[in-house]
Length: 224
Image (cartoon, rainbow, N blue to C red; front, side, top):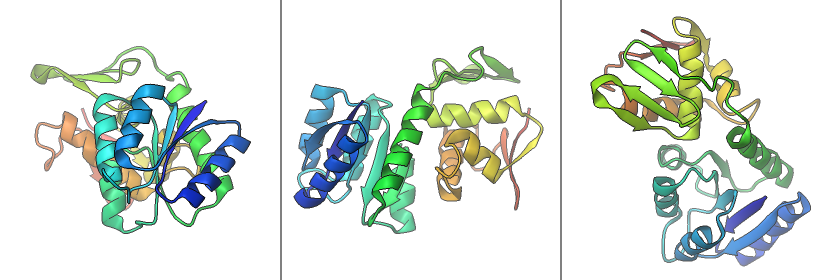
């Protein structure tokens, strides 16, 4: 497995490199945003560990540009721990968000969890149809009636698959987190932003959702 580490702090980048190499990863390094895009394009890594405060090109823009072209897993690792930063990173498609200082063991565990999510075969490979919506889990695509095909990220697809399979049932927040990210990998903010992104793609009016309904204090349900 190849991981691209992007951090302009050379000493910390060396620590990250050592941590990931010891865990069995092949490491590629970049120390600014533009180099990160170049290394990603040239080396096709399996995972990206991305700082946000980068010279030449901000880490959020790097995340946005990569996500527009690929589902390469991205873990943001940064000192920027304000809720707005976390929300923005997840909105742009990051798979996980870790605030420095960090535990090397936790970083490796979360990297492995992210990779398991993208390499594990879907539980339900056959298309799932609910009303006007038809989800193809293998292609991460959903057909939305007259709106045509919509491409989903891997996490969006996993959330929608879980909700559609359990349509009509109220799924607690922790159940959804475990299903999408795995135990102890995601959190409530990440789930909220994932629901927000999915609603924007499949709902006729995301501000008044027809399909993904919030059950206050409990979780979410998928209505037909």
